[in-house]
Image 1 (spheres, one colour):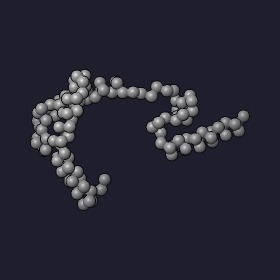
Image 2: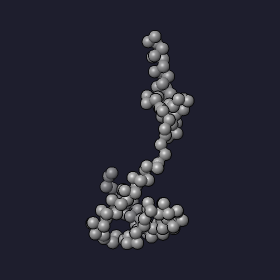
Image 3: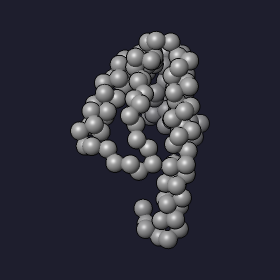
Image 4: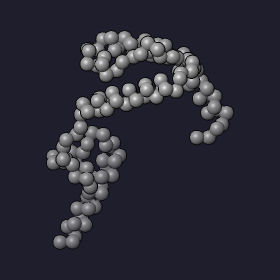
Length: 126
């Protein structure tokens, strides 16, 4: 990214906004965690010793927090839903001829056009 005056100013303003909103975000996070059941509370623990607004933290505590977060995120990833449908890797269609939900319309049109061309080439070879 270029280092123009405009981008520097925008970066500075975003940093100020983060500082301003950090206590509100922390309060909202604590409120959300309080309303969750005990399993979720164990996954995401909010430490009272969190320092905000540019106060320095010792390096070791930062590293420990990162390690704890990665361990909890791995546990959360195990429960993530996965698309178990069998898809053709070339056409991206499932057994019913449906494209995945995450595929945008433009890409679907492109794939349909490619599939049509592939089908025509296949017929010509016979």
